[in-house]
Each structure stands twice: as structure tokens, then as C-alpha cells.
Length: 111
Image 1 (tube, helix red, strand yellow):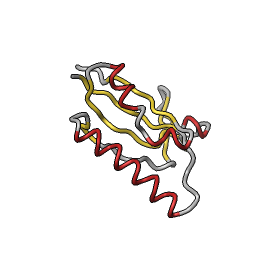
Image 2: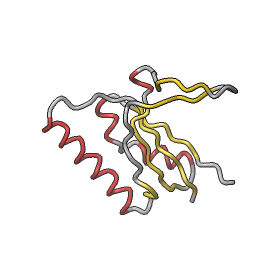
Image 3: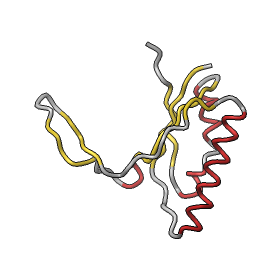
Image 4: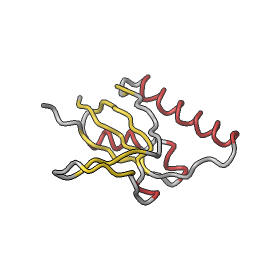
């Protein structure tokens, strides 16, 4: 088994508190199922939309990140799976797809 990072990108925000609650329930159910099947290593956290970017040899700090809505990273989760294909298959249950978002699945490099 290896570790994989799910990076959540895009997706529409709920319009009402009721919709938000339903979406959250689907996320909790999906993550609970991953945990019960032994795949959950770290639920991760949602990320705030604001931030800073430090770049270049001069280490210039700017406001950011500014990206197209579909590219904004909203959060992450660390899972364990047999291989990349298995990790991608597990990601298919993520509720973000119901709101037009996507899950980037990345293997964690062992060092």
C-alpha cells in the first residue's frame, strides 16, 4: 500500500445553509466509508481562499493565489491505496463531482 494525496479543485459553493449541510453530510459519509475500509490516513482540511505566494530568487511576496475558479485548491486528503489506479477509483466517490469540481490524485513520493 502507498500514500496518495487528493487535491480538491473547483466546484460550486452551496447557495443556502440547507444545501451546505447536505453537501457536508455527503463529504462526511464518503470520508467515513474510506476510513472504514482502511484507506483514510488524514482527512486533511479545507483551505481558505486567501493566501500569499512567495517566488523567485528574490523571494518576492505577492497576494494570491489567483487562479481560475476551476483551478483553485479547496482542500486535501491523504489516503492509502494499492496503486495510483486504485487511488483514482476510490476518488470517484467524492461529492465534489456533484458540484462540477475535480480531484487531483497524486502519489506521495517516499524519501
